[in-house]
Structure formats: structure tokens, C-alpha cells
Amino acid sequence: MNNIPEVVKLEKLTIKEASEYINKSTSWIRKKILNGEIEAKKESFKYGERYKIRKEELDNYQQKAKIINESVEVVEVEEKISKQDLMNELIQAVNSQNKALISETMSDISQKIESQEQAIKELTEEVRQLKKQQNKSLLDKVKGLFMSDKNNLKESKRNEKN
Image (tube, rainbow, N blue to C red):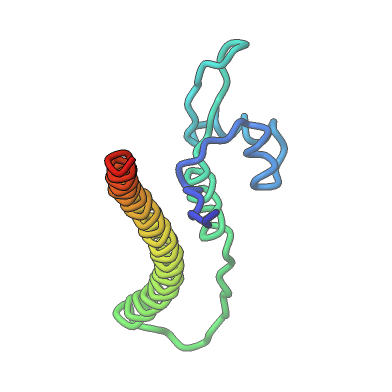
């Protein structure tokens, strides 16, 4: 029919689904929930309650973990560096990393917008086709009324002649 983009970020997962999504064990997921590192809410289902985790929460956790786990290369130098030079270097490194993250995020947003625009075009075309069918159906009904009136008029003229 049409390819409407999936709203992935709002999707909620069980602990088992979350463990498969980020390739970790269910006990690891439970531990992170209980430690408050991953936000999850208990929701009722037919057998009681279970934790549900938003995919967005898992994505955010993985992004934070990725940043924390990135290694920093330390090189021993003989010359001293001023506090101001060190601050400038750190600011430049952070700005560089921020630019990369912003660029990646903008790219993701652009792709999602393009996907949504395509879905809107498809839905607009579908609505146009439905309106066209509806108008054609209405036109056929009006024609049918006129044709039945025309046929009735011919029938009356025949009856008058006889």
C-alpha cells in the first residue's frame, strides 16, 4: 500500500526484546534498570506486571556508553604547556566532537524528514485517488438519475403513442 515510516523511538520493549536489541543479557538489562542507569516503567499485562523500556532510552544509554568508553591518547611531553593552551586544546577537541555529533544528528534528522515527506506524498496521492473515485461515483449516480429520467420520458412517449 504505502511505506509509512515506523515510529521507532516511541516503541517500548520488554527486557528480553531490549536485550536482543542491544545484544546484552536480560540480567544485564535488569541490573541497569535496578541501578537506575536505564529508565524503565512497569506496565500491566495479562499475567501481572513487567518492565517496558523505550527504544529511545536504550539508544541514549548506548550513546552515553560510547562516549564514556572512547579512549583518550596520553602522550608524555617534555615541554610544559600553559593552562590557557591546555584549555584551548580541550575546547577545540570538545568542539570538534560536538560538530561531528551535530553533523551526524542533522543527517539522521534529514533522512527522517525525507522519509516522512515521501510518506506524505504517498498519502496525498492516495487521498487524491480516493477523491477521484468518489467524484466519479457521484457523477455516475447523477448520470444514472438523468438516464432513468430520459428512459422514463421515452417510455411515456411510447405509451402515449399506443
